[in-house]
Figure 1 (tube, rainbow, N blue to C red):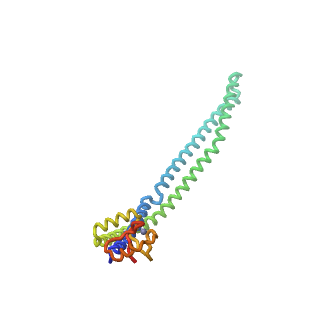
Figure 2: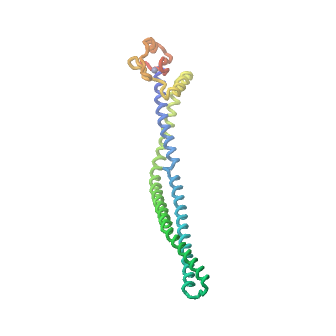
Figure 3: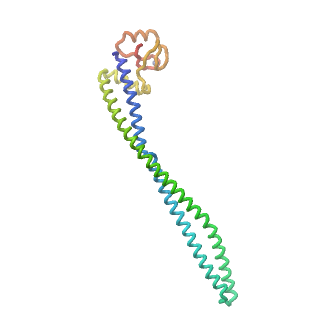
Length: 233
Ligand SMILES: [Zn+2]
């Protein structure tokens, strides 16, 4: 096999390795992300706190309302018991009673919305809880699949890596270095075939002297247009 042919074979090994390696990395990243479970857990926890806050808010409102109600009955008892004989005192109690009634009405109006928002918070928390449980179940299956994929890909990478070492050992060091630098610069394609006199890397027709040089030379010939190593037809 010519040196260019050896390098072409090495290149297909390197390309296969790059593909597996990328798959391995993607799989590892997916495993680490845990299907978005940590974020969902955090969201569910926040919704739990929000639900508690909403419930406390509503309970406070109810308590306040009960206190105002007590105060109202006390004032009403004083007003209607006939115990107050002083006009100024009666006026004062009446004023206080009116203020307490206004306060009661305001609180009563606010009670509906706080209850609604507590219920909304509870629904949201329940929904997130269910979503979390479903996602956790789904993740168990996905995790198993991903873990086995990761193992398989790791073994495949090792296998390709061994094959690569073996192939590379048959190539002179300088040529290997040249090939590797081309691989980096030419986005993973350093060796290309020539078909009907055309470089398959850049699609430029090669000058005839280059084609004939390729036929007789033992060394590597690069495309004068794209710089890639050429493999004769
Ligand atoms: Zn070219």
